[in-house]
Length: 162
Image (cartoon, rainbow, N blue to C red; front, side, top):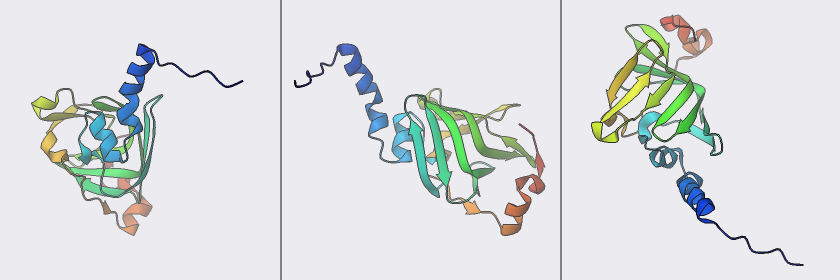
């Protein structure tokens, strides 16, 4: 007996069309753009990434932990994780931003209205608005010195605990 052909209902077809950009995203940049986010959120040393479209879990692997600059210094751990949904990364882990010599963990990144030209960084104690133009290209991420890696970024400034 041959299996019966599957018939796509309007609901399953609609669901498939919604997931299509996620399924054909060949790079992290394509994935971010398909979700309404700029391509320059992650640095130029991304080695690989995993994305689960069922639960939105994104895991980005970098070649090494590194420092980059948006409007100020940011630190990327070797692995950065978040839940990805349209217009945002929430539950972010592995990204810190320096403000007045104090390091804050970035908890979320949101683009509420792309036409506003603004992106919102949630650093827990405050929200910071930045220009989307800062994120047009992936930032150059410089590996920390060996001593800085051994000591960790906590020794480079005050660290706010999670």
